[in-house]
Image (cartoon, rainbow, N blue to C red; front, side):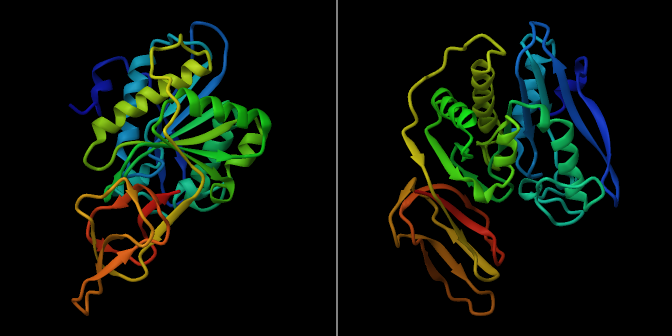
Length: 313
């Protein structure tokens, strides 16, 4: 059973914050509560950064319901559906300017719509957080296997905290990535905030993905001493990946991924087939890096430049 909408039958702890994006005004749902069990750390949780990734949104609303009475220490901020224009359009990007909020930083108050959106988040909430957990998953056309996406910032205290998260969240797969791809991780680390992404769920399994997200967020709150430790599997992750390779479409056409996508794939192995519309001839698609397939495009329309598969190694 989907959890969306169930908060309407209880006392609603969510406030709608109006934001002017230029072409239009939007209202963003925000849960911002100081725990009644004492002072402590601030945890920021966002979902719906990509407007078509639903498992994180599902988990965020469940988490709000669990903690709406303030049974924790510190401050808990949850934005369960951040990219409102993208959510309405069922797209990962913001259709008001065709930009992805996840790739935009630091934003400006009077800039383009996505710049205004990010500026509001950075200056209103992220600047005061100790940890920012950004919930992601497979979009409307993607399949995904759960993993944590951490970023190497070079800040000793933040790197130590990242190692603690990697050990305590018990993810089977962790990507410990270089920060050049996500520029906000370093400046946030210098402010004392650890940013990471949690990836779980895809277009077919929003409920299952939400369950994993909720478990991870409970572990983060335990690590920050916001709640009592929970009984979780403390085993070390089986795989830590240091690099990512993105297989991208080099033309518009048809894409046919393997029906049974393997977890591990070897160099030059076939990952799918592709075809130009005007030719009608299928060609094999092989990868250049051996590694673990983290997510892949499942639907068949292929657009030049889009990611067909992400391989960690």
